[in-house]
Length: 218
Image 1: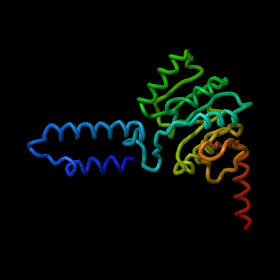
Image 2: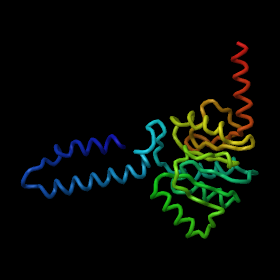
Image 3: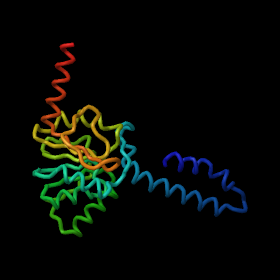
Image 4: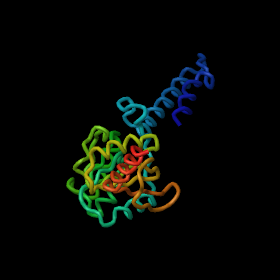
């Protein structure tokens, strides 16, 4: 989508050449297209000036089935939950209704404001659902028992390193749509674009240690 909008902006002079007969039309067209590009940047690539290219994740809301599948994989779990890139907050709201103490990390100020207002409208106390405008890559996740993430396949490998470094053994991670490349899922729910994967950190660490030991023996 970024490429298509940039092409329109670049080719605007060809579509509406700046002649004396149409200065107002040209000016208005430029303003409208620039505005559309700005809005797209805010929602699709939040914080794009502050985050390295390889860690950028476009805003894409979870579907109803994805949310339901995530909650299935969290059944029997309790404690604190961190939603990485919480977007419009739908996963946080679902998890908070199930008794989790949730924090949604999101760097897009518009989405954070929307989520906070929705939480107030629902009457949710901050102890149950909190939305923080912070880059989750810079947050210590060790206090959390559960982590949910609907990101992009390009960042899952980098995220796995962070989670293994910071999360306690009894933590569970839920990945929506895109699994971790080297982690064995404990279970999964749904299929296709709505599939979600559950990982128990203790089992993941044990699996990776076995792989490392096998590689050393060979």
